Image (cartoon, rainbow, N blue to C red):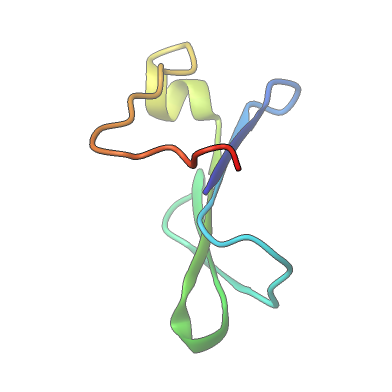
Length: 73
Protein backbone atom coordinates (compact mmCIF):
# COMPACT_ATOMS: atom_id res chain seq x y z
CA UNK A 1 0.00 0.00 0.00
CA UNK A 2 1.19 3.50 -0.80
CA UNK A 3 -0.26 6.80 0.41
CA UNK A 4 0.67 9.96 -1.48
CA UNK A 5 -0.33 13.58 -1.03
CA UNK A 6 -0.08 16.39 -3.60
CA UNK A 7 -0.11 19.74 -1.75
CA UNK A 8 -0.50 21.75 -4.98
CA UNK A 9 -3.98 20.32 -5.58
CA UNK A 10 -4.68 19.15 -1.99
CA UNK A 11 -5.32 15.56 -3.09
CA UNK A 12 -4.57 12.37 -1.19
CA UNK A 13 -4.33 9.00 -2.95
CA UNK A 14 -4.28 5.65 -1.20
CA UNK A 15 -3.04 2.92 -3.55
CA UNK A 16 -4.01 -0.46 -2.17
CA UNK A 17 -2.67 -2.62 -5.02
CA UNK A 18 0.60 -1.90 -6.84
CA UNK A 19 1.04 -2.07 -10.59
CA UNK A 20 -0.94 -0.84 -13.57
CA UNK A 21 -4.62 -1.71 -13.58
CA UNK A 22 -7.40 -0.77 -15.91
CA UNK A 23 -9.92 0.77 -13.54
CA UNK A 24 -13.33 2.30 -13.51
CA UNK A 25 -14.03 5.17 -11.14
CA UNK A 26 -16.93 5.21 -8.72
CA UNK A 27 -17.57 8.63 -7.18
CA UNK A 28 -18.93 8.54 -3.64
CA UNK A 29 -19.30 12.32 -3.60
CA UNK A 30 -17.53 15.35 -5.09
CA UNK A 31 -14.38 14.74 -3.02
CA UNK A 32 -14.03 10.95 -2.79
CA UNK A 33 -13.61 8.46 -5.63
CA UNK A 34 -12.87 4.74 -5.66
CA UNK A 35 -10.81 3.10 -8.41
CA UNK A 36 -12.18 -0.37 -9.06
CA UNK A 37 -10.07 -2.83 -11.02
CA UNK A 38 -10.50 -6.31 -12.44
CA UNK A 39 -12.79 -8.69 -10.52
CA UNK A 40 -14.24 -5.69 -8.63
CA UNK A 41 -10.99 -5.28 -6.66
CA UNK A 42 -10.52 -1.93 -4.90
CA UNK A 43 -7.27 -0.55 -6.32
CA UNK A 44 -7.21 2.95 -4.83
CA UNK A 45 -9.04 5.77 -3.11
CA UNK A 46 -8.72 9.41 -4.19
CA UNK A 47 -9.63 12.22 -1.80
CA UNK A 48 -9.84 15.76 -3.18
CA UNK A 49 -9.79 18.75 -0.80
CA UNK A 50 -8.02 16.38 1.58
CA UNK A 51 -7.27 18.95 4.27
CA UNK A 52 -10.93 19.83 4.58
CA UNK A 53 -12.28 16.29 4.23
CA UNK A 54 -9.80 14.58 6.56
CA UNK A 55 -8.03 17.05 8.75
CA UNK A 56 -9.99 20.19 9.54
CA UNK A 57 -7.54 22.37 7.63
CA UNK A 58 -4.45 20.18 7.69
CA UNK A 59 -3.37 16.76 6.49
CA UNK A 60 -3.90 14.46 9.47
CA UNK A 61 -1.10 12.32 10.91
CA UNK A 62 -1.04 8.66 9.90
CA UNK A 63 -1.08 5.96 12.56
CA UNK A 64 -0.34 2.32 11.77
CA UNK A 65 -1.71 -0.27 14.18
CA UNK A 66 -0.77 -3.94 14.21
CA UNK A 67 1.21 -3.55 10.98
CA UNK A 68 4.47 -5.38 10.49
CA UNK A 69 6.85 -3.46 8.27
CA UNK A 70 8.74 -5.40 5.61
CA UNK A 71 12.14 -6.49 6.84
CA UNK A 72 15.25 -5.59 4.83
CA UNK A 73 16.71 -8.56 2.97
